[in-house]
Length: 277
Image (cartoon, rainbow, N blue to C red; front, side):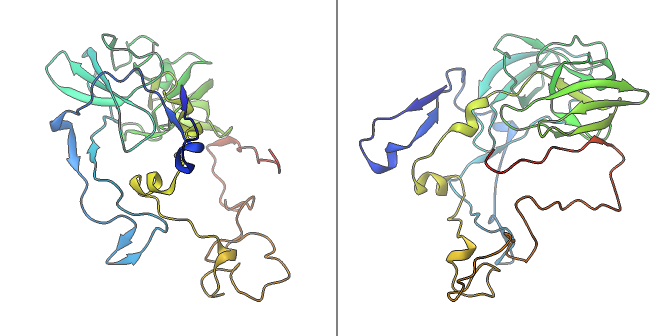
């Protein structure tokens, strides 16, 4: 749910924030956090990732992307906010006394019990091998390699769908529209991740962006020195041509995947977006 504000100032005029009524705990578990030290977007003082900075100080939450507590039920003790990502976190209390964080899907509430393993039921929050998940079931937190931990579909409001099972592989339709073959032994979590309105939020002013660690994004055509960007230069009166990155590589619609070395695990390529859509 989005909250709109009365336009009492320029910074509030366009602001839209998420109302998180499901948050039940404000302070994180101390043992499940670690401090983030050092600079962001720098390597020995040189900019390696543009338009990024440290932002407001925050602790990193250690999330159990690789769920290995097979057969041990866990009770959802709290739903918490995570400043490092879009979806909220669910704090689990396992029957053996351990605690951990997982990404909270829609419908997961305090007091519910979740499980991991081949014998677990296909219900929200449970983690099962792809071979045991029924076709048409929405999933997230998907492994690419068995036992490596979840690598795909971890953003707010995202979910993939199990389409079909072929031998040792399962066809999974990703949020981008791409259909990919994934090993049947890979684990995934049932459900759609929460905070689907996260992408609709508007911060309203630059100061909020700086708190998140996002510096001003300068357009190439606004730069005066041609060596800084292919679009730069004060004597450019014939347009910029096809958009390019600062390193001269075509972008915005240009296919960057190799045509000679194709990925045999991609069944259907992701659809290309049309102009104006």
